[in-house]
Amino acid sequence: MRFDIFSVFPAYLNALKLSLVGKASAGGAIDIAVHDLRDWTEDRHRTVDDTPVGGGAGMVMRADIWGKALDTAFDIDLGRENPRRVLAIPTPAGSPLTQEICIDLARNCDQLVIACGRYEGIDGRVATHYASRAEIEVFEFSLGDYVLNGGEVAALALVEAVARLVPGVIGNPESLVEESHGSAGLLEYPTYTRPLDWRGESVPQILTSGDHGRVGRWRRDEALRRTALRRPDMIAALDAHQLDRRDRATLGQHGWYWRAQPAAGEHPIRPVLEIADDPRLACVYAELAARTFPDACPPSLADADVRAFIAQHLSDEAFAAHITSPRRVIVGLRDEECRLIAYSLSVIPEGNGAAGAEDGAPVDAVLSDGERIGPLIELSKFYLDQEWRGSGLGGMLMTGTLRALSAHTREWERPYIWLGTNAGNKRAQGLYSKLGFELVGRRQFMVGEQNNHDVVMARTLDVSY
Ligand code: 6GU
Image (cartoon, rainbow, N blue to C red; front, side):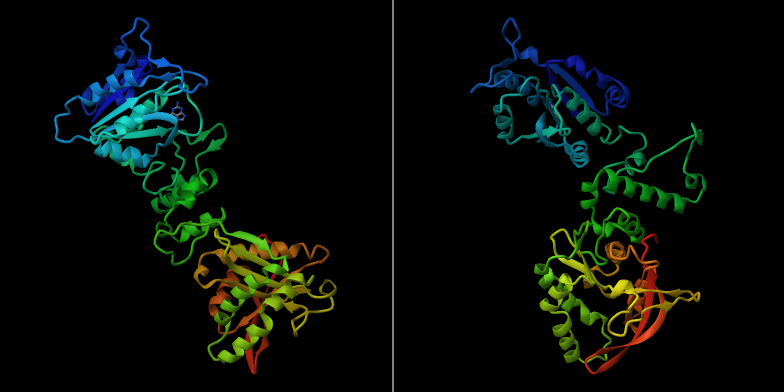
C-alpha cells in the first residue's frame, strides 16, 4: 500500500520514519512518500494561500496549487489495473475516523493520498473536483471534536492507524483481535505486568489464579464496565445477540437491559423509571395492566371472569383513582421510545400500617426463622411486559418500587412488603425469591366466582440486597 502525504510542513511527518511504521516502510510492507506542497508554487514567495472569497478571517489554501500537487500523486502508476485511490482530507468538519474505516483502507486501498490543510482549510473545490473523478474517492475526516492547527497530526494518526492493519506490518496479528474498537464493540479491559505490587497497588488477584475461564470472564466484565462508564454510546450500539447471561448482570448494574429474545439488530437500552403521579397517565397504565394481568391467572379461570376483573379493577378510572390516592404508589419503567414496559402498584395500609390492610391482607406475618414482621405494605401488582421477562428488568422495577415506598415509611419501625401470587405460578415465585422475598403464608383470592389459592411472600423494605 502506498501513502502520499502533502504538507507545507513536511518535517512534521518525520515521525513516520520511527517505530513500527518506520520499519514497515523500510522493509517494503508499505510505501510512504512525503511531499512539500510549496514545490508546486511558481511565485518567489512560494505562496499557497489567499484571502477567503466573501470575506472572513484567516487564509484559504489555493485550489490551483493543490490541484497541481495532487495530480502528480494520482498520475503515479501503481502497477495494477483500476487501483483503489483515496484522497483523505483532515478537517475538523470531516466525518469521524473509525477503526472500521481504517480496516477497510488497510485491506482494500492501494493508494492513500493525504492533503494536510493549514490556516482556514483548503478551497472547497479541491474536494468536489476529486470526488467527481471516477477513479478517486474523497474522504474528509476528523479525529474528534476539537480543532488542530493543521492536518499533519491527523495525517500521522491516519497513517499509523491504517499501516498497523496492513497485512504483514504487525508481527503478531493476534494482538489486533481483542483491542479496543475491535469486533467485540467494547473498550479493551485493563492489562498489568510485574511487579505484582507497586506503590501499594496490587494486580487483581484473579489474574494470578491461573483459571483461564475466570480470567476471561473478569476481563469481559471489566471491558463491559469500562465501556458503560466511558462510552455509553458504544453499549447502545452493541448487538444484543452477542451478549450472554453474565453480561446481563454486569450491564444491569449500569442500567442497561435487553429482551430475553432480542429481535435482529436489537441493542441494549436504558429504561427510565417513573413514579406515576399524574392521573392523565392512567390510560397508559391501564393498557399495560389489562394486557399483563391474564398472564398471572391460572388456566382454570374463566375468560369472562378475568375480563370482568380487568374491567372493574384495571380500568382507566381505577388507575386514575390509584394514581391520585395517597395510599397507592405506582412505579413504571419506560423504554427509549417512552413505551411503558413494566409497572408496580403498592398499597400502603392505613395509620402507619398499625390498623391493618384492606382486602383481608395480613397485617403482619411470620418469617421462616420465626420472626414476626409488620406492618406490611402490599405489592398488589408487579408486571413486566411479556417480552421483557427474563431480562433482569424485574430487579430494576423492584429497586425502584422499594425506593419509592421508602419515602412513605420513614416513621415505620421495620417496614415490610408482601405480595400474593398464584400458587401455581412458579415463574413468578422464582422471580420474587430472587428479588428477596420469602414464603410467609397462603391466602384465598377471588376472581369472579372462583376462589384462587395464592402464596404470600414478604421481604423487608430496605434496598440493600
Ligand atoms: Cl482531521 N484536522 C484539524 N485541523 N483539526 C482537527 C481534526 C482534523 N480532527 C480534529 N480536529
